[in-house]
Length: 352
Image 1: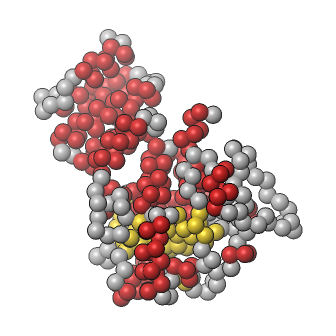
Image 2: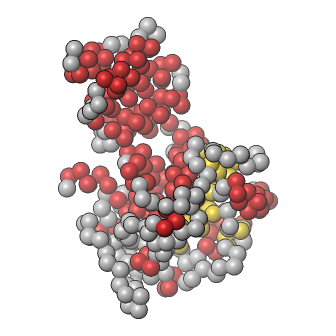
Image 3: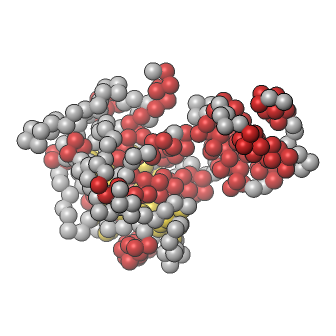
């Protein structure tokens, strides 16, 4: 039989204990026998694997195969709906603070964790899985490298873990391990307000003045330590020291990165990755003057006032903004309505 006949035969087989093994083996054989499998068929193989593992009760494997099917057919709303339904749950927790750290910076993370414990604030400590675990009852190892250049994947994995395991009604405050708690009451009040508003909030980045060599000397991969960051600036994003994602923007980030894993390519800065995804998804940045607005402080670095965090208007369509000379003034911040009016949704790329 040719490829089409074999796929049709495979899809017609019922999923039952009598066919589980044969279905999985035929999926593997098809990928071995044919070097090119169109994505319109590739997703069906992964979806069949999902159905088998779900029937077997192997939930983690089922989700993994379903994610592969979604990446192969990202505009198929039915598969995306299956994923959302599979992981759907409601939590009594409204907000969760994620301390993003590494085994190397364990002491810093534990210092901040102790402050959250004393203030009775819900949090998790997140590190990568290729080092020993952090010794804390609230430590979480995601299945991503602990190296610096993997921070975008680490943060995305942490957000996905919250969405899949805690609930789709939970807001997340991502913080770096260098942060310190300055005002616990201010943090609690801020989180309560932000989850009600269901927004993306943070201190705006410097935008066009972004240091494209900021990762140099920090990466384990020495090639990256001499590679200039090459992605365009779309608008100011929330600086990575601390920023907030309500349940709605959190879901948009999780689903977008699940559908389009290529967004990670060439991206070393997780805060810009999250900001760029939310540009495509039409989520404006709810600006904060400084980390003190969250009740947090960054030791040794006083945050600049909002007027000095000059944002640039988002580029219309796919126009890439060109950086002005160093001596040139940076454009004034634009309003949230202006940002929304020019935002390009990632789903709209398909029609261009």
